[in-house]
Length: 167
Image 1 (cartoon, one colour):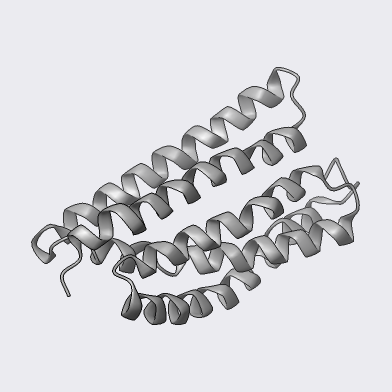
Image 2 (cartoon, rainbow, N blue to C red):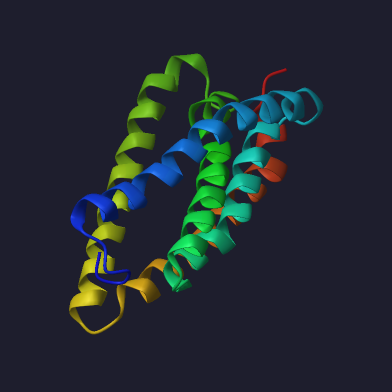
């Protein structure tokens, strides 16, 4: 709203529609890719999550950095596509390494950790903004978290999944 001089309706629309529609396209693509990779590699689904996260990194950076609305919309579409690729395998990738008897607890913990992380990052961005850090800088800095998360997915896919996956 402030950065681009938009009214609240237009700001809300722009902040959600591009990412969400692209995510809806990325999710089935990520699912198809993950199923294909899983046939060849035990950690194939986690690899796809890592790929989606890593490819989304420059676009989340761009979402904070860009100053032209049209360029931002393109970055949000590309970020949303990568987000959908990642999101398509959140539960399926976990099911590759968690035994059936523990899957309910695992999904509960996965959601718990996700909500804690999302809440903490929201608070952190608000805190940084209240203390003089431009919100755009905070959003761009999220790319560091994406790189870390992508690295963890690749480590899990190559190090742990081959050990844990039941063929």
